[in-house]
Amino acid sequence: MDSVEITVVSGSSLVTELADELERFCRGRGDGLVSVFAPHATAGLALMETGSGSESDLARLIDELLPTSGPYRHRHGSVGHGRDHILPCLISPSLMIPVQDGKPLLGIWQRLVLVDTNRDNPRRTVRFSFLAG
Image 1 (cartoon, rainbow, N blue to C red):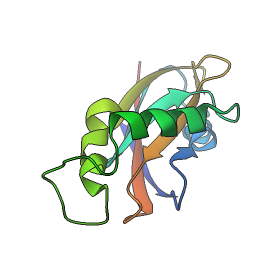
Image 2: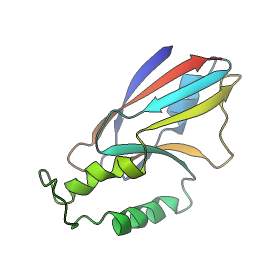
Image 3: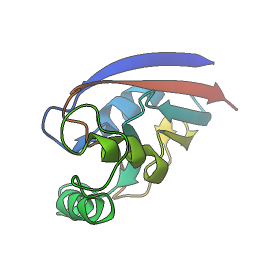
Image 4: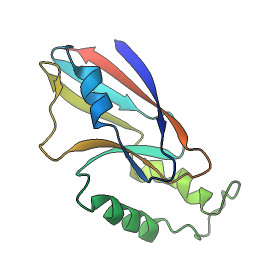
């Protein structure tokens, strides 16, 4: 299994697109599966359309489902940090994507994104692993 770990700086963005990194990692690898994993307790990975307003729709949905002022028992960190720890239960920290001829087999509008509500830690790690098949 081939693996690489990248650093992602999410800053103040809820959604950070990783489509270019995914394409670059898969290029020249043939057929198989790529596993994408964010080893964090407060971030997840998703496939979504970007640039069409979906990011703000996702932000609104997260705020509705996981309000920052919720009655969380997990209370260290900044306000709303309790919700940050619930996020990966709804937006998984891992994905598997089929690859053919070195290209991820995504739909035309699908983009790989890191979803991160945790403003206390803007530096993230994402691991890409290729399983040849």
